[in-house]
Picture 1 (cartoon, rainbow, N blue to C red):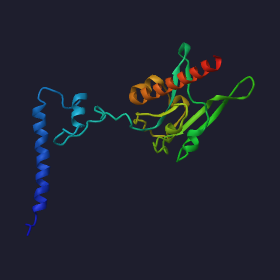
Picture 2 (picture 1 turned 90 degrees about the horizontal axis):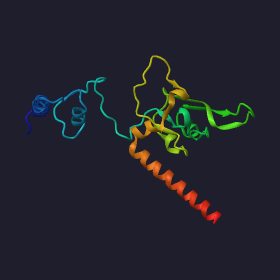
Picture 3 (picture 1 turned 90 degrees about the vertical axis):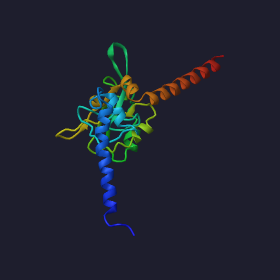
Length: 204
């Protein structure tokens, strides 16, 4: 028959162990920065972490994994003279697959002819209702919309992000998602090579 209170004592022992491990870890890290350093954050985020600790946000920020998803961004390629060549063609697929319907797109028009052009004149995402599911990025056929890592967007007003706020360079995307970007670039190069080969075969 178990003694009454034995479970509580076991729980308190676990708490005491974590409490003591915190000080033992500080002793092990003597002379190094366990806090406020990338090395310390990486250690405390790993399976080898011991003791209790708090991430000292905002001075410290836990590194997010590559597949971390937050508000989408619009990718643009840097053209001549610093021009921003947005990849989005305003096809509207992202708006159609969005579960909470938080994306609005206004297709651009040629100022001379008045005909539609493959570029959005306006692009809005209501960050207050976006569920960060990533469907828009998954279904985009032009790799024009991707999920960002920037989660610090709190404000006192409504977070209705326009095209200028959403646009970020392809270099930025390559920095936050290097593995995904490498796969996409390889697939794009393979597709271009196959297209060139087909053209050469037709010409020959």
